[in-house]
Length: 110
Length: 113
Image 1 (spheres, each protein chain N blue to C red):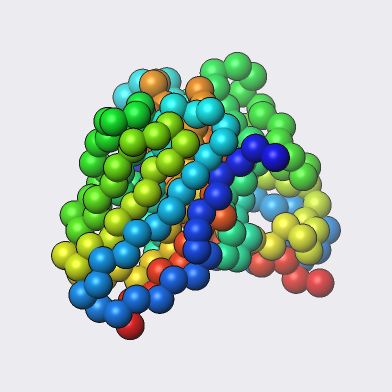
Image 2: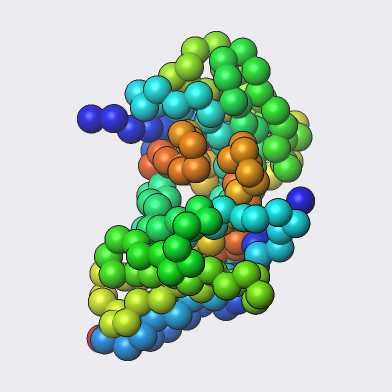
């Protein structure tokens, strides 16, 4: 089955620790995205990548980092510089005019 | 930059009643518009999309939306609500090259028996 996988589904970390969220797609899509979702705020774009080895900051990139070494993979690292990292994180990929979303990772920082 | 406004963070309807979820956008160029549905702790699923073809767009699960350029609106409707429609709905707009998608803040739909 083609699709986007995100792991883990739930993640708990202590304050001050970096954590990496996984996103893998087998749809052969060039573009991939990371969004953060908070209650009542919709989706906010963190980073996006249109092609391997290239990525751009979105609206709320501070405290986050990404890499795009392979077409299939777009991991997101939440660093200790992110002031309020507890949120639901969604990965997406796109082909043409449609975005496909993964199931999300809920990160809780204790 | 483009923006999307969804009026009403919460909408409640009775089962069998009309569903109307409102979306207005701002765009300086012809937009591409989308409605997504999200169930709790899940990703977003595309309901329907407008890409400059017919102004009335039909989607999955009986939903449809009408693009009205003069009103800069793309409201989502369903003639008869079902309990399974209870979810959060997001309107989104993209730029011409689809590199970036802008989302509204979402509307939670509650369906009462």
